[in-house]
Image 1 (cartoon, rainbow, N blue to C red):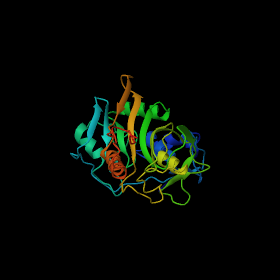
Image 2 (image 1 turned 135 degrees about the vertical axis):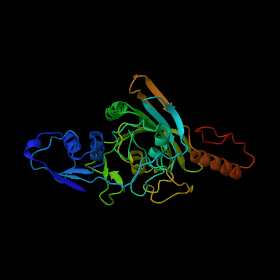
Image 3 (image 1 turned 90 degrees about the vertical axis):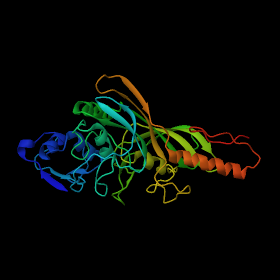
Image 4 (image 1 turned 180 degrees about the vertical axis):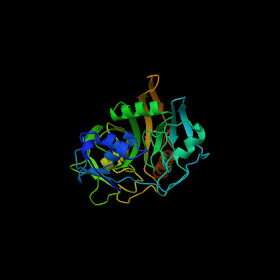
Length: 326
């Protein structure tokens, strides 16, 4: 944790510009991310990146500092969905951390991408986050864009900030969701009970999640959802779905410890991204195939149905289809 007291000559400067200048190697994008995560406080209160600091403001930065490490390229197999001179789009597997941090010094997506891209990665993300424009949780699988140069990084960051990137997820939740489509608009912030968790809190950041039901499985009390988000709060989908009573299967943090299917890691997959190419401005739509752990649940369901309904022919379960022929 670091503390800064604003001097007279810095009065009326935007806080993201001020901290980027004060903390060598920390970009404005990185500062904005820390503000979103509520790890930067001004006079003990949350702030915005656009806030213009005032003389004698006390700024506290709770930046997680990883252990000293020599970041190395590692030959870790990873599916490449798309690659050109500006970006690389990958399908991150469940269980892989996006960038090094305490407890995860290597074996991350960054280490894998470094082996593929060599020295061609944006430096805006900082020493341990080269090229990282956005993140998904360790135990969420799916599509991610990595920037190969600073121009691409800045452009993509602006698109995300302006809600111009459409992110679509697939989730399997516990319970039968009644609505065919709905929007969850509940503010999210740090939990007052556990600072490691996020929660719906009155004074949190605006968070908007849309979902629609793809299929309901009454037999096993689960629902398959397609989810899109307008905002990108930490753990947003997991928190929102748990809050309305439909926690994601396998979510050890937001499902009250229940895990009937024995899944390690939540059944949440970043399926697709739609955005403008940062250089050519071409409309891009890219998908990451459904991972094996989703297919495993579908296969286990099929076997359970066959065992319970002997003599009833069940059709092959393909893609996202649930159900049993009657």
